Amino acid sequence: MTEVLSVPSGSGSHGGALLEVEDLHVEFRTRAGVAKAVNGVTYRVDAGETLAVLGESGSGKSVTAQTIMGILDVPPGKVTGGQIRFHGADLLKMPDDQRRKIRGEGISMVFQDALSALNPVFPVGWQIAEMFRTHRGTSRSEAKKKAVELMDRVRIPAARERANDYPHQFSGGMRQRIMIAMAIALDPEILIADEPTTALDVTVQAQIMGLLAELQRDSNMGLILITHDLGVVADVADKIAVMYGGRIVEEAPVHDLYRRPAHPYSKGLLESIPRVDLKGHELYAIKGMPPNLLDMPSGCAFHPRCPYRRDNCVTDAPALYPIDGARGSACHYWREVLDGESG
Ligand code: SF4
Image (cartoon, rainbow, N blue to C red):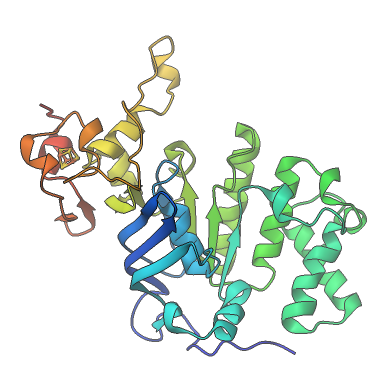
């Protein structure tokens, strides 16, 4: 039987975004202390829109995604504040059975490591078919037919024959396509792709990004693309949220951020992208290490690494200052960064 979401359907039916994360706080209680992984994250994604969430590992981007999906390890993880609204309904206040229904049908996720996300002992076609059987009660033969159609849609050659193969019989890129097929099986309204191309070589990366963009266009999904690599999102994202130390430090339409970053960290990330026209030059790297979440720096968390730092940066945490309506920067000196003046 088809499971029905008990939240209003149809994007924007409540007059807001499809998905809104507001002032989300998540921490992990460990023996070494409390790690503040997400510290007031706010973003929204509309139907047909792609948000790239960018940051180094430990920046809070994946923990935010896991919290949206309801797959955070609790404990040690704990949501200590905020809301995650899907069609206006707060997922964090929903009973577990209601959230389970939204997982897959409303919001779905592609993980970085397809080999460990797929079950090694079942053929891939069977695993995709199970999505239909479990969530929709589809008959065995119909589910298998749908699985082959989906494998075709994500361009697995000879899909009918290959449906009987096991995950280890596919290349990394093909396994990622199978993961994507499973993630879109139930026509989710939001797809979260967490580092979907990290383990793949550059040509295959481009193919997978192209496939995600095409699927999104066809179905008008909202897409949240989580990555540490600014280079892979330029052509597919509409807007970018740059995360550092569990906070969004810059948010901007993608082309604005590429043209004129307004935060020293985003500027550093952009300068670290290898460029063919600078062949022979030493590659730029942001100095220092990401912050220790158990012992966050005072004031602006980026201050130990920031070439623009002034005295007040060590004591005063910057808010996300609005710039030109459509963007924001959590830097006291964003004007100087935009103008390229440091020191
Ligand atoms: Fe750098 Fe200060 Fe801006 Fe933080 S607030 S990014 S330390 S200039």
